[in-house]
Each structure stands twice: as C-alpha cells, then as structure tokens.
Amino acid sequence: MAPVQAAEALRAGGLVAFPTETVYGLGADARSDLAVAGIFEAKGRPSDNPLIVHIADRCQLDGLITASSPLADKLMDLFWPGPLTLVLPAKEGALSRLVTAGLPTVAVRMPDHPLALGLIRQADCPIAAPSANRSGRPSPTTAGHVLEDLAGRIDGIVDGGATGVGLESTVVELEGDRLVRILRPGGITAEALQAALPHAVIVTDDQMGEAAAPRSPGMKYAHYAPQGELTLVGGEPSSVATAIQAAVDDSRACGISTGVLAFDERAARYVADLVIGMGSETKLEDAAHSLYAALRQFDAAGIERIWAESPAKAGIGAALLNRMVKASGGRHETV
Ligand code: TXA
Ligand code: MG
Image (tube, rainbow, N blue to C red):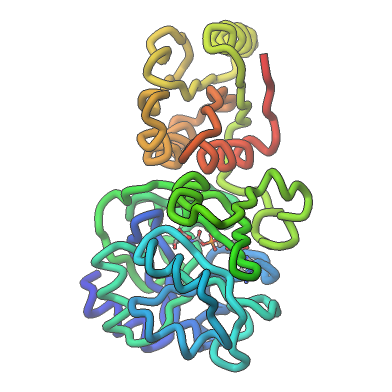
C-alpha cells in the first residue's frame, strides 16, 4: 500500500502495518478508542498490555505528556529518532485509554525510518503501534511476516523491505535527573546509554529482577515463540555444540524433526533437519537482525524441536538473549 493511501486509512480509523528501524508495527490513530481496540483484536493481545505511541516530531509530544524532564530531553536529543522508548507521565484525555491500559504513563518513541516518519506526518496524529504479529509469535521483520500473521485482519501494509535492527526498541523509565531503568532491553544498549550519560545510573532489567515485570506489563506474557519447542544452551562453545548435537541425535532417533540455531563459527558442525546460521558470535547485530526470521523459518519447515546457542550478554546481546529466553519459554540450560 502506498504511504499516501496508508495515511488516509489511518485517518479513517483503519489498521495499517508499517516498517520501523526495529520491527514492523501495526498502527492506528492513538486518539481513537475504536481504532486502538482494533489493534488488540487483530493481534489477540491482552488488554492490560499498553501500546507504544509513535511520533514524528518533538512538538507532538507536548500534547501527550504532562511534563518532560532534563533527563528525558537529553535522551530524546541523543537517541531520537531511534530505537529508544521513553515512559513519561500521560496527559489525561489526550489518547484513547486503551493505549495506556489504565496506567498514568505513556510510552513514546520516534522511529528512525523514513516511511514511518512520513506516514505519521501525513496521518497527522500520534500512532499507537505494537509489533505487527499475532500475540505470542515472533515479531515481524518483513512485510511477508506481517501477512503470515495478520492477512485479512488489517487494512494494509506499507512494504519497506526487511527492517534493520531486527529487535524491538529499548523501553526506559526515568526517575529524577540521574536514574534510567531499562524495562525492556532493545536496540539502544545499556552501554550506549551509559556512554552518552556518564553521570546517570543505568539499571538493567535483571538488576530489577521481579520488579521489572509489573513495570512493563508486556514483559510478563509469553512472547516471540516459534511453534516448535525451543531450548537455549549456553556455556563453553565446544561443550554447547556437543550437548546440542547429542540432544538432536536423541530426538532424531525418535523420529522428531530437529532444528539448530547456531553462530556461524559452529553452524557447519551440526547435523539436524534444519540448521540456521545467525551470523558471527563476534557481531551480534547480525543475529539480532535475523533472529525472528529464523524462528519463522523453523515454523515453515515444521520443525518440532529447536536448540539455539545462547549469545554473550554484552551490548545488543542483552536484548538478543532476552528475546531468546522468552521465545524458549524459559528453557535455558548451561553446560
Ligand atoms: O520497536 C518497538 O518498540 C516496536 C515498533 C513497532 O515500534 N513496538 C513494540 O511494541 O515492540 P510492543 O507493543 O510489542 O511492545 C511495547 C512494550 C511492551 O512491553 C509494553 O508493556 C511496554 O512497551 N509499555 C507500553 N506502555 C508502557 C508504559 N506506560 N509503561 C511501561 N511499559 C509500557
Ligand atoms: Mg511485541
């Protein structure tokens, strides 16, 4: 669908999928109850999981929040447009209440993608947009993935090819002038936040433990899962490879179809029904870019059991590991 038509559909209360630099979003006019209700229905999304509001210009923010802060302003200066979502105090009545799921805060970001920015400007309204997948499935990084999940349920897709980052934005909550809590790791790493704000205290999701889940309601739900059973295996690389191959061999002996998601350094060593290389373990950006497409490839091949090598947690690896752990439903072994 051409961006002009898509903007018209959004203005008329429709649902349009569009590319961002992270994953495809399913957009609707964030001010309209009816349009936003359509997002929850199309995705099968629980209504207590709030949506991110996408804007194209900083001046749009004034109408959505009661107050910014020097810390929030600094983060916007540094990282917008880009994969950083800020949770800010919501202005009563500015948006459909369904967007914030009853919270007093609203999550806002400015995507770094010309088609997304053009669409938001032409629609001339804040756009609520979760990832454009059926709830629980891997997020879509191509227009084809969106169609797999949502064909017949939405009004159109703006096709911008494959998305860049491949994982969703980093969601942060701020306190005072120094504290940045990462509620969901993503495209902007903890290291990048710390380097940009040397005096800030960056709290990561695992430092918050259980406290992170209620703060970002979406994090408590099952997510990103392929149809086959996924197990993550971490540890010393050659032990990981040996353990995965042994588990694959056991399943194959029982007639179960098997898949392995491995780093390129070892992918050629595995014998399974489908082995997918996700790039080098020294360049985790490539694995982030290809993770969701790989999970969907295992589904397309009807693979029943999948094993994945666990990435190192530094940099974008933190977001990658977070998504892989969720996709595995917590089946994470260390050998
Ligand atoms: O990269 C992205 O962020 C993509 C693209 C399309 O922009 N969007 C995305 O949306 O990932 P979604 O709905 O799949 O994830 C939104 C996350 C959820 O974990 C949700 O709980 C959290 O943001 N969230 C939204 N509003 C919040 C709020 N007021 N307070 C805390 N967390 C919030
Ligand atoms: Mg999502």
